[in-house]
Amino acid sequence: MLVNLVNFRSLADVAIVSFIIYRILVLLVGTRAVQLIKGLIMLTMLLGVAMLLHFRLLTWFLRTALLALGVAIPIVFQPELRKMLEELGRGQSYLMKRRMSTDEAEARVSNITGALSYLKAHKIGALLVLQQEVGLGEYTETAIPLKAQITQELLISIFWKDNPLHDGAVILNKRELIAGGCYLPLADAPEISRWYGTRHRAALGISEVSDAIVIIVSEERGDISLAVKGKLSKSIKDFQVERLLRHYFAGEQVLTGWKEWSRLLTSIFWVKNAEQDTGGLVK
Image (cartoon, rainbow, N blue to C red; front, side):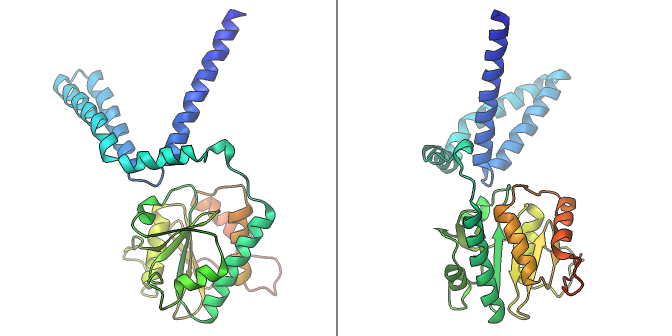
């Protein structure tokens, strides 16, 4: 009986610590601290190899470096740590997140599709980045914070030609518009066609380094393109965009691989009804 109790306590102890570490990592995703964590893991692994091979000088050097980093990290990454504690204080924990209702999802889909239709009709260029699991804090921190409700009117006004934010991208998640005027990394692969302008290159660039869904409205042609995982689809139909947005806001599955996205895009873009012209993927 005592052994079973000890085992249960040990399992509960490990589970609680694992959950805390997981939540800390989730809060740090999208910040500069992610790269630091990767570096610390590499240094720790190298230290283990050095100790195994009895490299005394290298072992001493790595231990000293890790000790110095342990002192420097709280100072250098003070903003990230403060943000993490603030989010914990507001109760934004995994268990307290409320699942979006169907009505809420449909309202967001309607607002975005309405804005896209207006932008297309008036040939106003736009770049919408739908954030998923990979955080985009690196790009929102240097942009204009919005923290605003997703509305058709606000999206149109942001990309209006006289608005100072219209040249950058808007980054949003399932709950809100996070930031506007965001400048994204440009894809510069030599095989990219000259057909692509700055917006399309930026969309491809951010889709290569994250799992974000990127919607582009071309001001030259007035059509919509989609970038996912470094792949671009152009001349996307309105009903295709609507299905994709509905899956993003109401769907439970998070797609991170290109094969998964290919299956989803196939189900969205290719329909059995021969009267609907769906287009295809452009590689």
